[in-house]
Amino acid sequence: MADQAPTIAPNASAIPAALVNVCFVLAVINIVYFPIAYLSHWWIYDPQGLGIPTDFVNVWAAGRLAIEGHPAQAWDWDIQRQVELALLRQEFPGYFAWHYPPPFLFVAALLGHFPYSVAFIGWVSASFVPYLVMMRAIVGRSFGLLLAIAFPMVFNNTLVGQNGFLTAALIGGTLYLIPVRPMLAGICLGLLSYKPQYGLLFPLVLIAASQWTVFFAAGVTAVAMAFVSWLAFGTESWQAFFHWMPMFSQAFLTEGKATWWKLQSLFSLVRYLGGTEALAWSFQWVLTASVAVVLVLMWRSRIPYSLKASALAIGTLLTTPYLFMYDMMVLAVPVAFLVRIGLRSGFRPYELPALGCAVALFLTFTFTGEPVGLGIILIVAALVLCRAGPWWRREPATPAMAAASA
Image (cartoon, rainbow, N blue to C red; front, side, top):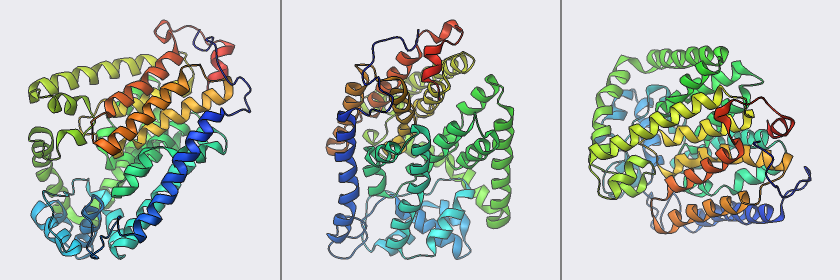
């Protein structure tokens, strides 16, 4: 059965020393680096006092445009860039374009009221809090806090001021709350509509699992957010969003303006290796359809909920062609569920070495820029499938399976 393979650390109260040590080292690096980098002018501002061009600048610039009464101009690449240049006071290649739906302008407008460095650090810190809470809840003990801080993508996400913490917190919060607080789970999922590319699989899975409270709560929340943003920012903001989205898709998924190595999807890997756009889309759609079928079957099976939740979190990453490395903060969610299972029923001999390989690949990207994200996702996916066992047979739950459930 799913959890009858030999395990290590069978004592539920024992945390493997290797896991603790690796997490401790990574956590110290993440905690110590950024204060030093800020004071040394390696982060946010350079030694000349000029703003370092990075992703967060588009959030602050969009917020300023919204505050000044021109929210629709946030999606105009040229206007947005002029605001960014005025802030940073130095030229940079390309664009840091704003492409989020209008509800996310509420966050940008709030941050735009503060000086740039205060907004940058405040955003990273504030979004880190729900991420910490989510990881602690999933793991089920205080070690979850150390695991959250140690996760390798914390470094990348903090470095550029991206929203990976919030995305991971909402996806992880949704999955953690579905069995116990379905209404709150739906609200978390509805708030995730600022990243619509991650909402493709959730409706399918929720319908398959008859999670109607979550389904409708998410829909109501998303519609309410859209309505309130329409009242606040006007019809023009929604018109601008839909007008600029095809251009954004053309630039990043057809022309490769962001460079293919920065994206971590199967689509981008095919393009990085020289494949055509048509070939890349073919691979991506086959993968998306396959993941959707597997998830529907898994969520209708009797495997432990922790594995269902892990698989869905992984699926959100596999099914989008637009996947930057900072979005792989979401991978902390299935890792947390796997650690939860391991701490309760023991880790299998290959699990910690496999996670170690995933960490090594994360570091490979950080230091070399190689597009290894898909490999990392597949490692974690393989661990989940190995834990799930022959889920397609829909065998009845056993005590061993129950011991691994969340």
